[in-house]
Image (cartoon, rainbow, N blue to C red; front, side, top):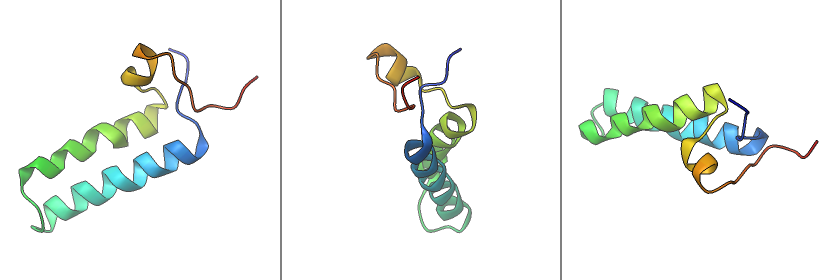
Length: 62
């Protein structure tokens, strides 16, 4: 699969995902915070299925 998640987008996804998981583990929010696994995974693998569906890419042009 071709990467479609670029630099700043990747950093934001990682931070948001990690914050949601940390807040869940810390008891600040309920179990819905585990949804943070999704942005964390898309940041790590650099592929977002929703971006692919809508033909969007935040990667720099070649």
